[in-house]
Image 1 (spheres, rainbow, N blue to C red):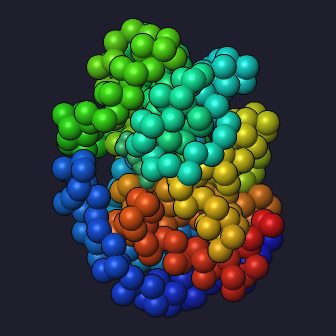
Image 2 (cartoon, helix red, strand yellow):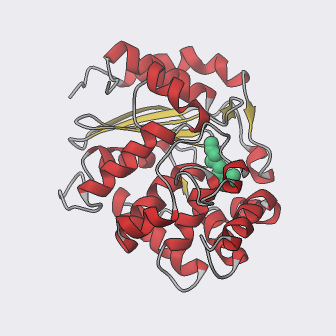
Length: 309
Ligand code: DON
């Protein structure tokens, strides 16, 4: 395990990448996200031995957005098994933007992977629970187990703001309902999905989630298997092939870490034998990835030889 990285190094590097916060834009297609402060930056590393370091505004909370796609995939796999899940959602990267509807028009009309919105919506639909709140409650309990922090909840304002304006995600759901990928109420699945995306954490909590995946799904303190090793591996593989959307290829070359981003400006990376790295910086590039997050992960990867390839 490479533990040369110190708090002082993280602090210095965060200051070095700070100017890039003005290169991108805070997400505004979800109205509540447009109120995020682009100057808020934070980074945390949680090593698999349980120790951690961090720098920046580590108290700042943010909604996980697309990062929850990895968590919901793990739970859906545990609820339904691999065969069922991959009968409904594919395993291939798209090269298209995360909200694209285009590939759903090509038969067979199942979403290409669980990291694009269409795939993630179908995964949320698969999570066991009779009501949206039951599904979200199960997801939150799962996050509590992963972080050993039972205070984590979802941001109601962000969830409501997305629910009111998610016409594209509604369209994806209606399209998939037409093709029997999802059944039942579109509004209920969207309700569960928008609450899932609004699960709110800070970087130390997110880095611990990354570390749990890096630790083959085992709790960092007790060693208890929270996610079966095989499912944790599936999730990390999707992080490599589709975690940064249509920037996953360049990210793999420049940074080389299994990682997942969200439009709130957060990124989590998960490195076997090392741990989890979480970065928060709400300013996004044109693909929807945190500008500062990408810069910082690239610096860390190059300096400490962290690429898995
Ligand atoms: O469904 C959406 O559009 C958002 N709740 C999540 C999208 C997202 O985070 C894409 N990330 N880069």
